[in-house]
Amino acid sequence: MAHYLANAVKLLSVSCNATTGVAPALRVLAANLHTTAPVAKNWNGNNTGPQRWLQYNKVIYPPQAPEEAPRPAFVCHQKTNIKYSPKKMWYVASFVRGMTVDEAVKQLSFIDKKGASYVKEAILEAIEMAVKRHNVEFRSNLWVAESFCGKGRVFKGMRRHARGRAGEVEYKHCHYFVRLEEGAPPQNYYQMPPKTGEQQLDDWLDSMRKRKVISSL
Image (cartoon, rainbow, N blue to C red; front, side, top):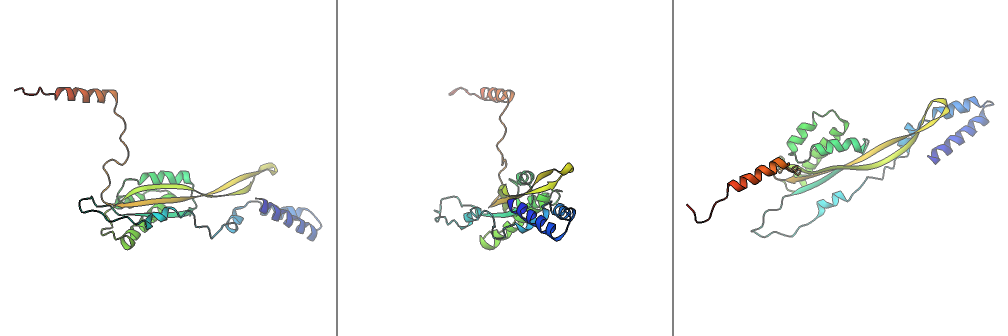
């Protein structure tokens, strides 16, 4: 913001020297007051976002014993610097948790939200990674084990208001993270709600009625 104001003051001084009046300089300054265009110039192209999530793909596990249950394969993927609010992305990310990849892609195709297209693209890219790099045999035998988003970079700009006032505007970005796991999804991904008092009483009565006297007829 300080860099933008310094350029605006410099532009004002140059315009005042070039013209005899102050009105042309004020018109030039007012035309550049809204900072939608300078946001692209301030973008750091070398910043690719967080990289720790992708390091889980490089973990090497020890060989398993024959009697052990087979360890399911998984793949982690992310999409960074999405021009979308993280609060809005949270709804889409929570929606696909616990779904199979086919069901998630099908449902996201009918969601009329901007974030749904990014989530769908990330899941499809993760499926390709699982098949090509992680030796997953069947691409449909995957489910969404983790799906969440994080806050990205926020650019602050200035916006014109009435009576010569100025307001602040924020251009928010977010990061989306997904982990696909091999196998069938669990029946209940989220924890079941606690039982009510009536349900607990019914369970107790059923347990009492099922009692049996040992060594009886």
